[in-house]
Amino acid sequence: MEPRAESIHPGWLVFSLCGGRVISYLVCASVDAVARSSMGTPDVRTKSGITQLWSRRYGDIPHVAGHFWTLSDGTRLTPDTQVFESHLSTPAMRRARKRLSVDEIDYFETLELAALLRHRRETALVGRGILRARLSRMEWSLRETPASLHRDLDTFLRRLYLLAAAGAKRASRNEGPVAECAISVRHFIERSERLL
Image 1 (spheres, rainbow, N blue to C red):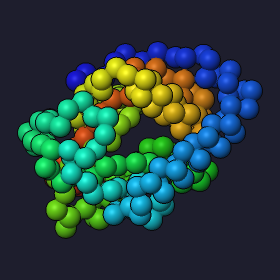
Image 2: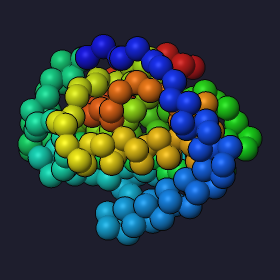
Image 3: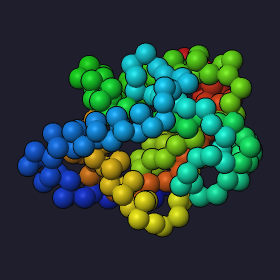
């Protein structure tokens, strides 16, 4: 799936100037806490706490576009495929952003995560995201999620995450609604080796 052309939502810039970044951080921290308490302890977690992975059957992950998917490198996901459900922690990202750029965070998280995944049996990392162009550059496969109230709410919450963690400029980018994203563990590790 080709990433959509990017446009700007000026409303997010205005919201940020009116205290929206503080509000979004409080909302996202609460949502993060509820999600983590319901999912339990991550099976894999980077030292920064930004990237957190839970091992699950692909068929047990809700709100996906279907439980059969062939990724860009040919990896086939079925309901019985063991995968990692991937989440990023907004509070941890915000702490890291005080010292590092987004590109630097991506670099260090990718290298550390690749080392943690080398001896795991899971097939792929699966998640959802709204920065489609960035995910494509990082070689994740993307596909549309079904139109629904959940998708609209998820898209809105992810814009709040971006506002809280990275500021109004990133949150105001409009690349369409949240998309499902995935990358095979093998492809992820190969990409990390090219960064060295």
